[in-house]
Length: 234
Length: 385
Image (cartoon, rainbow over all chains, first blue to last red; front, side, top):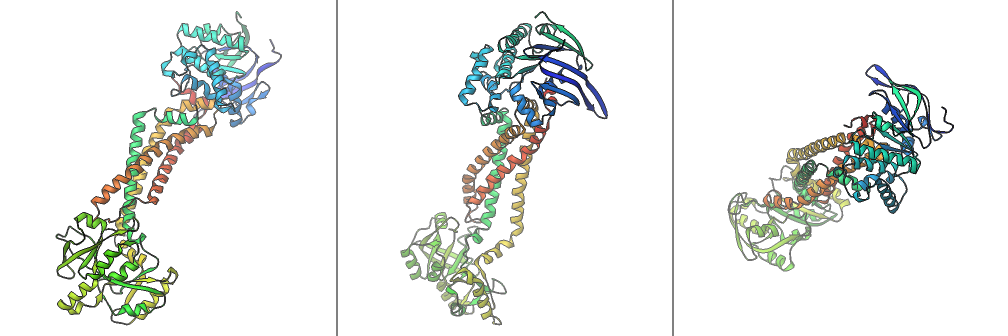
């Protein structure tokens, strides 16, 4: 099924890593379109290249060949500095291990990406508080990551991911470090982001339950994308 | 929340490590400051020299004297404003361990030539009047509890015998560079005694101190003086006061070089300590730097975080070291006043302390920053878990 105006368009993407004198192909001839406001899950066994593909879409790794066009911009042509700027406004990141800065409070962690914007201190405060309210953590503003549960830390990470109002959220095993209840809450929150805020989410996961929340599931195996389009219950 | 706040918070993540590093820098800067002050004290005489003063001595050696009759001949040379003279007396007060510099001088001309030695007018008049009178510096008088009118006896070494004096004045230095541990008495007292005991040694002076009209004529006047006494029984060597003082310092130059070397070794050691701390810190935070880069923070932000933390630690240690240098220098100076009559922490030493703290902070951050900004985000994130 072809998407008319995809927000992400990947064409003939190849990526390999060098280990000593050996070149290990990680992704081979990937072609993928992702629609706006879509919740896509990418599944596959360990070492299949899921995280590498996610990193390439998010602009934190470089392709060997091929193109990745996000919202009309071919990010494979951007320089390191241009990519950094592009990421700060277009991509929100959710990691398996939350990756919050331990010496900053929940509020300060969420405010962090806003330091790169021209917003005033007052505006930054409003934005960060609104996002923390959205993830139901208004009462945890001054708590440090070490004082929060895993689920709460992941919600702070989600608030940080959406605070700059990016087009796309990339999530690498967002429930991988959480218990079942917390994982369910996080997935519900991600669904809300798609439905209520119109975000596009690309999620890498091993967990079929997590993938079940996605609109579309793609399977990756040994660097090759199975283009069979699996639509979920949604 | 600002980057400065993050730098501050990062600095105290490992409180013990940060505390020990700051302590190390504090001790290093304190040691560096004290060693530089020792070097400054070594050169205190040179630094306190005036460009308008010359010293004339016997060209063979300072041990040999010059005739008093040279005084009038020197005075006639163009560019000479004032001529004073004196001898190193080398007297001992009670015991040899009570060392202090003691000179016999012409009271009238000496204080005119050395305005930085401040003696109240009434005390100066009393000193000139009393041939057995002496004046001492404030520190020396305080050290031995001398008061005006007190009788003091020095045992002569170069000029044997017991020499009795009465204290007529206590001088102060115009500024901190002036040695306040000297003892001066009248040259006439020495000369008249010598006339009675060893007439052959009378009417001889150890050195002439000559005031010139301006620094620009100093070289010409020195040349004219030495030319005047060429081929005489006592040929002269005239040099600026600075060169004269440098002559003494150069005798112990090897020690000064050794102290300088040690002061720089201290800095190299602390540089290695701080560099190690920063390398450990950066290695532990590669994931965070990757996160910062992921969020869109550039290389300059990462560099700012690492340099900021390194500079915060070194400047805190440096500031503490500087603050502690003053009481330490005072205690050291009091203890070593015999060897270092002026032991003051100079502004130059403070600037050097600050420069060293800055240098250590900057240099320690270079390699960790280079590694942090060049790490690929994907590699950085892979270190998690």
